[in-house]
Amino acid sequence: MSDLLPHEKGFHVSWDQIHRDSRALAWRLDKHGPGKDGAWKAVVAITRGGMAPAMIVARELDIRMVDTISVKSYHHQAQGEAEVLNAPDAEMMGDGTGVLIVDDLVDSGKTLELVRSMFPNAHFATVYAKPKGRSQVDTFITEVSQDTWIFFPWDMAMQYVKPYRGAD
Image (cartoon, rainbow, N blue to C red; front, side, top):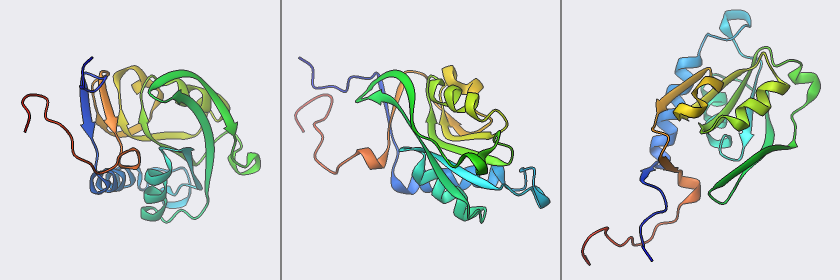
C-alpha cells in the first residue's frame, strides 16, 4: 500500500493565496454587471467551497445582497450526481440577471450546469477552472489540469508530512 496521495498532482492553496485570487476575481468582474455603472445586484455562493471567495468578491465590489445555494456533488473525493439541497431566494434570483454565482472551482462542470439550468442569465465565476468544466464558467482566474487535485485551506490541517522519497 502506498502512502502517496490518491491523485497524480496536488495543488495546495493557502488562505493568503485564496484571498489574493478571490480579489483578482473581483477586479476582473468589477464594472461588468448589467446594473448602473456595471454593478451586480447580488452574489450567490455555491456552498461550501464558494463561500470564502464569494464573501471576498462581495466585499471588494460592495455588494450587500449575498445568498447561498447548497449543492452536493462530492462524497469525500468521489464526485456523484449534483443535487440542490437549498436554493437562494427565488424573488431575488429571477432568471439570474445581474447575479454573480461564485464557487471555488469548476471541475467536471456538473454543479454549474445544474445551477445554470435554474438561473440561465446569471454570471458564473470561479477562482479555479479545470478543462472539463471550463465551458460552464464565464469568468475565472486560474486554470489547472484535469488531473490536479486542489487542496483548499478549509480542508487542511497543519501537520508533519512524510517526504515522497527518503525518510527525512
